[in-house]
Image 1 (tube, rainbow, N blue to C red):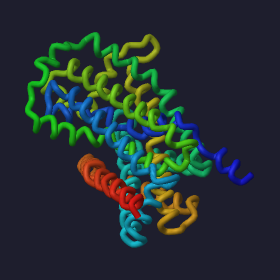
Image 2 (cartoon, rainbow, N blue to C red; image 1 turned 135 degrees about the vertical axis):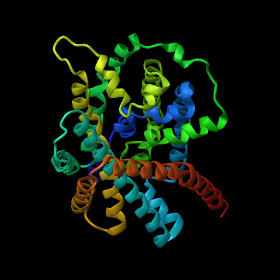
Image 3 (cartoon, rainbow, N blue to C red; image 1 turned 120 degrees about the vertical axis):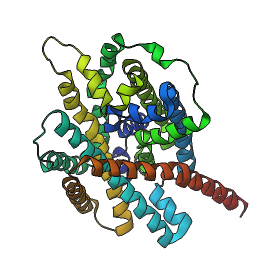
Length: 363
């Protein structure tokens, strides 16, 4: 009976697509094209495809790592590296997830302040978001997954608004193709990694999936959906702006929304930002849930109490950041840590787990 109850708390395999996709799409999509274009120019859309392909490899690595059993990365770190080193690695993961939640929330608040309410105090939207986050997390991972599902479905219609800027675009801006060096593509891919961060939540969500091995294809579909969306935004941005204009546009996607015409609203970007609240919310919920999950296992604190501690930390950091330079620094820090996580830690863990399994079979 207890086993049936626990099984009923798990999510269906196809829902991992929404979990991964919703955690990858965040506030970065509103302005990432200018950062990639600075390295790869008109070939930036190819950089997006390359980064998406690399993340499919990372997803494959994660499933290989997690195939050890019905464990998450916290359990495996402790198993492979012992209590002390494992705890250090797990605490680093917790801080990384907490940083991700803080970056997403504070950057989106900056968008609201810059575009809609310049005089809005930072603590007001931060408090609203974090109180709602606590309410969702109190319902467990199934509730968080439900938020991810609606965070993809409700704002999905915004993808069709790309047609309006496309009408005024010059797609000859994409030519000539493959006009940049290998190092340009490498630098662009490194920069693009920040926008693809979020798939690492699989390392913690794996034990919460019914028949988790069956979810592999859905995880790849989540990354694929992210790649398609980013590629579409990048192509439209390259065609809509000249190189000089794109470099001067901090929020290029929002500016492009200005050309969307509806008979009942003059400033469509206000609608876009409003609906983007549904996109940002799952990011915050998943990152704080992941950090609290790690904290529960490492520090042996009840998750519902640890969530309150983490929310307080995120709230404090958000209100202490008062200017664009501080927010940029936090984004850069998250990008660097995410890069090292995916390109150093994940391959190392993958190789270590592969060697561990081979040695174990021979013994």
